[in-house]
Image (cartoon, rainbow, N blue to C red; front, side, top):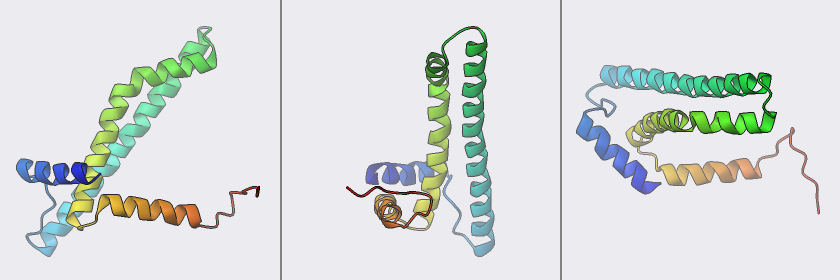
Length: 127
């Protein structure tokens, strides 16, 4: 994860796409703009899911087994889904880098927090 975060920082600098630190107003505008771009990319992930569900439905209506139909639909959107998820990751990395957050440390810390959280919806069986 450290490699990808470092790559993203250098890439963003080379492309002139880093979040502005020139002034509060420019930082605020840049943060909001990048947040809007991130949410747009998340919506594009949803669009790929919608496409997969519609493909699956069409295949089932034409007689294909549901599981096979969904596997085919997943395969057909795989490349575009990867691109959209990569766009999301790129924007997220901008925020990690702007705020000086170590992606790897933050990720593992959060996963540990979730693991240890008492989730009222999750019932674990004791062995």
